[in-house]
Image (spheres, one colour):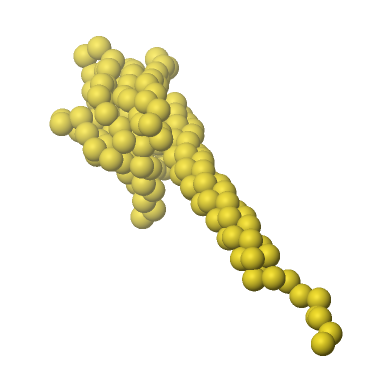
Length: 156
């Protein structure tokens, strides 16, 4: 009787065990990389949202002809020659509205403080904390009015 060359049952079981260990290691590494990717993606989205909000808000605040707040100081209105941009501050977001366009920035604003020009409703300083992916940052915007704007408000 002629013997066929083949693998023994023990050899096949050892190969299967090594294959299972290799596949389990690869799957674990894949899950770790995926988890890290999602975490970094969330962080990147939050930081991009913060930077977009910061640039938009500071540009609107500094370029406005005048900035006025509501009595409860939860909204700001930036007045331009041809438009009014409003910012509404809530617990989780800041909403910017220009005409019929609304933008929401999820930056978790807090501790809103508003400074006004002496003897007027004009706002010359706004400061508040912003949380962007577990990092808390204080955002401070200062506005300097020219004499013509101050006189216009004084004699309205």
